[in-house]
Amino acid sequence: MTARILIVDDILSNIKLLEARLNAEYFDVLTATSGPQALTICEQGLADIVLLDVMMPGMDGFEVCRRLKSDISTAHIPVVMVTALDQPSDRVRGLEAGADDFLTKPVDEIALIARVRSLARLKVVLDELRARASTSAALGLPDPLAHVLSDKCDGGRILVIDDRESSSERIVGALAAKHKMSVEKAPQEALFRGAEGDWDLFIVSLGLKDYDGLRLCSQVRSLERTRHLPLLMIADIEDRTRVLRGLDLGVNDFLMRPIDRNELVARVRTQLRRKRYADALRDNLKASIEMAVVDPLTGLNNRRYLESHLASLLDVASRRGQAVSFMILDIDHFKSVNDTWGHAAGDEVLKGFAARCKRVVRQVDLLCRFGGEEFVVVMPDTPMATAAVIAERLRAAVQGEGFQIGDGQKAIPVTVSIGLAETGGSPDPDNLFRRADRALYRSKSSGRNRVTAAAA
Image (cartoon, rainbow, N blue to C red):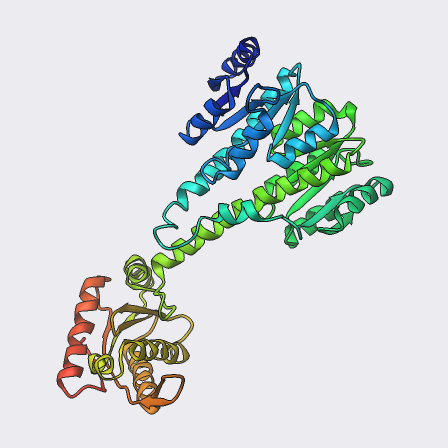
């Protein structure tokens, strides 16, 4: 997997060493020798991952990272700090600034490639979600990143998988004040709980007795329900090779024993922030899809949804030899409702009309707002005789009681005209619609508030 890697260092020899190693793995490499230059490159959208030296004159790496992570246009870019500082306090400072990980000089080449590949996979997923949700702003949905950046990321649902009681107690003790913690000693049971529960993070010990922690991580990644669940490995210093293997398997982060409490808290917060951003992007995507096929006033499916599904529905019915009935409903004299009572009252009538229709039609029927005061009901496996009974019930339900407007202070009478058609020998949506529309016209021309069926 290739990616554009930005190396930021004021020492040219350091840049050359990293550049040569990354080029050998077919990554595209960009370079910057100062913080401001790095910020400009990232703002232009040229970098997928940033390898950032900490000790630079003028603007140090901590400040560069803070600026990247506080800017909504660059906050999603993974940042790895490359530093000679190896104290836990230094790592915590970087994590607080928003860094995704650390590499200590001299840089281990295998660890470098493993971490870059892992972050490149993450960046691809986030970029795909960002691209799919790019229409959200046009539909009026906010960019979730701004909210996530201000979120303290408390209240995470975290499962610790560790069969050493002293180890799990330390982890829980460090996190329980701000998160909902649970411990599972049995790896297989943890897998079941992961699939059944709604977790934000798994913390997996690689020191499990009689079970390979990496196999558990692999199984978590293979299940649809837990595929996107963040994984944080807890490893001993001798587990270095397994940690690198875990990154290749898709584990998000790791922490070496002895565990520094503050670093654990900071790394957990990073994973929760990343997950909440990805979840928000998925929610935005789902909402934008729903907005494209759902009428916002009535909550019914709209014309676009009807047109995209009707042909396939008719085709399936034709192959099975089943009848499909098609009903067009038009609220009588709806313009006079708007003219007399106002458009707000008209909206209340439309919402009330949709609610009455939903109470009458069956669950198998497709009810859509076609546009304006016109509605459509598609009734699979339904002959005309049955459809006519349902249509009459709909007509009676609309006429039977006035529609409340103005906080229920007034009730205005409303009626509906209905046209019906049934599929013939050809599953042609246009033909079905035209026949139902002509039947609707006859209902209206015959005095309205009636049901008319098209000739066979």
